[in-house]
Length: 443
Image (cartoon, rainbow, N blue to C red; front, side):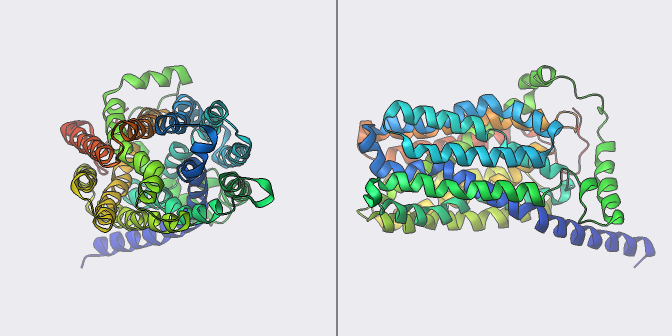
């Protein structure tokens, strides 16, 4: 073995150890933030088991109101990411979490459909920017070759929020009548409280960028800085960022459009399942607590698949086929539910679907983060997320309408599967716009 090879291997071993240590410092608190915010985002699915009747809402009404979150989220996401980059991630992410806690707790006081809609819209306003903000934040810390695994660890919050939140939500619904309040009111107020704690932890534990991290040695800060600088050096357009309005013109960029379509297609089953699964499982004839336990099962498989698939994508350096394969596995699992009548087999199919739905996240989001230069990353990532997150408005409404008109969830699950199939196809057909981790990226 040559000396050069030994140095290269030693350097790579040092990089794995250092970035692994950074990951253990940075990612857990961000994961906790996402789990808590996502629980506050989707716990309406559990609350609706009893709250829809109390508030006089049909399935379509609930789907529309639940989806209003994503309209405001889309409107404010790009400005939020723009401000995060300029104000600093620590302050901005802490602000998001504390505001999420306030608005989520305010759901306790909702007494009719109009108030429900206003609360959901407001929650989207204050939470806007959390997800793309963290994806952007991770690009400040990790080179591309390590990024999918840490983005996957963060995005693990999506299925993990249901693994943790489903049993808890099922229990909280059983508090109905305590102190004269409904179970769904207790659910909202209790599940909002951790957001305040995590907001403080973000303020205390995180640093805006590696050069401000007092928990790294000067040599380690310099190493991270140089690693990231080498990647930026391969991106020729390092001019000024320009105004927010100038950057928003990226909305016509082919990469933004392509990735937004993929995000939308693969996001529809994610949000459809996340918001409606408790009611789908409840139709099996289970109690609310049993519904909570059983609802967690598909998300356990989704969590495992997300980590395994993200690491495999990093190891192979491949993003496109990892995204496509996962999207099509999700489509197959959801489509199978259309023909299955057994609750047990339906749960198996839903678990397969969840594995595909969440395995998409790591390779796809890494591909997005790698496709924009430093100059355009903040707004480019946010625009993709904003447009793609319209799936969060469309999916619950679509499921509700199909449920109201057919009396069943199976046709709605088939529709979710077709959307995932289309999202994977767009990723494949637009292959020339997707940049591999090792490639040079322009604007």
